[in-house]
Image (cartoon, rainbow, N blue to C red; front, side, top):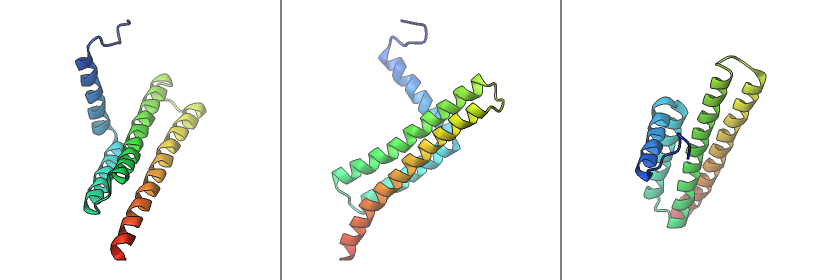
Length: 125
């Protein structure tokens, strides 16, 4: 076991919670995605979606948040490696990571719109 591994589950959970706190505090886009997830889930409750639909929406929103956190880690590592200097490979890596966030957000929005569109159609009928 190396010096960076935790031997204690409770410490591991604390480190993970600290990571979530750091993402919330330092990443504006993470906060935006979290707010959108909250609004989306609030509408799910109002529209009385079923458990499977709620699970899909929750998974899609969580996936966006996870990809946003991974994007942030990639950016931090690249910035540390290149000492915050511009480099073509750094730009390419950061752009691809940002593209992954965008793709996950678009798919999440499509899933949510399909579910909500169906619910609103049922209400209107």
